Amino acid sequence: MEMEELRKKWERTVESLVRQGIIRSEVVRRAFLKYPRYLFVPEKYRKWAHVDEPLPIPAGQTISAPHMVAIMLELADLRPKLKVLEIGTGSGWNAALIAAIVDTHVYTIERIPELVEFARKNLERAGVKNVHVILGDGSKGFPPRAPYDRIIVTAGAPEIPKPLVEQLKPGGKLIIPVGPYHLWQDLLEVVKREDGSVEVKSHGGVAFVPLIGEHGWEE
Ligand code: SAM
Image (tube, rainbow, N blue to C red; front, side, top):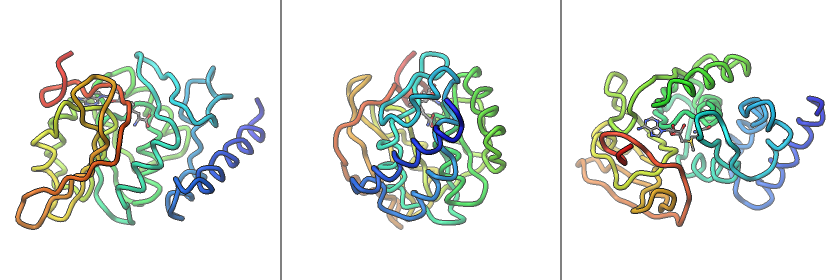
């Protein structure tokens, strides 16, 4: 498929997400248009990148469906200059979208070396310069750059990992799928109050691959 056709199909997907009220803010709409999903999927799936479904990426993982990514970004309420940590880099697409909105350095952690390479190549090809892809166990957060205004986890955890709450600034927010089963979770919005306690709101059922690590599931 020609680039022009990919672009047109992608613009229609973005318009549809706006019409459905899933993309609600101009910053998220602009980020989606700046970094189209077809730049972050394996070549053989490029022609399906506009379809609102998860798609395979290397190492048996997935790039999330566009509506899911939009829902999480809207919940995160991102603004320029916020310091954001993403956990579960995968293809690098969500990190690129975050970077487009915050317009400063974004840190993203991935546990699978093959995906660290995949994401770095995608980000480079898309011209994204402010995303730092780190190899490691994101269930422990990333202390060297803490505290964060926002932490966005794109894999499902059995419970809210304590280190992630610790690494949030007071007033900061964690978006994370949490649930007792590997592939079924509640999407949680965890806000850290000034006194260090947390307020947790659920935003309904989601299905993510598992967060595997010290504060996640066992491999
Ligand atoms: N955000 C990604 C994107 O834009 O393509 C999609 C993420 S995919 C649904 C979940 C990712 O989380 C997988 O790549 C998986 O390897 C990674 N993951 C799982 N457990 C992890 C951990 N403890 N630390 C870092 N990454 C982890």
